[in-house]
Image (cartoon, rainbow, N blue to C red):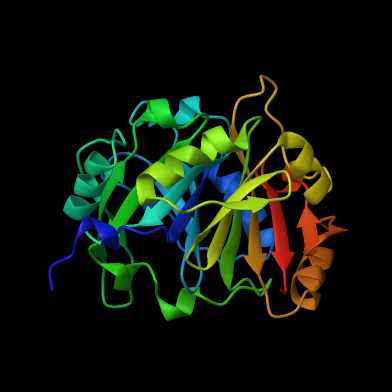
Length: 284
């Protein structure tokens, strides 16, 4: 049966962490945080990355190599830290049609690739993305990612992490006006989508919950570990990972000498130790 626009539903594909020209430093720090990272990849568009891949989603450390900062210069105008909320795509053309029908401004689908080193030789991981207009999202990007070759990203040998991370289960945005910020996502996916949350609103996105909260609610819930936006604009500020037991990330963090603190749902690492975003772990 052919897909229709009703098939376009929110499922988190990955979260992008903008590290600009600090890929080596960020990769070393995320390994200290207990994440198993893929080898450095290089996009046909000019950017480079390392991934931490989980069961349903992944995080991407995105930056540029020396001398390549002009290849995707628009990305590096965003603040360092969490700058990409990326949803899974059922089909780029269906996604584009759904966004048009729901009056969400978006760019035409774009294709790109990056080589992946495998025991049998390199293969190209291929992607097609549909980006929401940059005017709609402050200090970051929201887009859909279609994996033409998912087997080159979600590989079983990459899913085991020393800190026990299984999936991203929270993606957090700070906004002075949560209802206004979150309205974009209800337009993208159709109503009803949003649910009340303490200090803002939230919605389910597959294994993850996206929370859009006031800065005061963020500071209270995440114990002051998240960065703030000096000018009061919206900002993506935290990720939380599911683990089987909090003893596993505690041990990994303690072994690396990285401080952490308890919060309502688990433990939290300050943004100063995690490339400018708060990193949480929960066994719930």
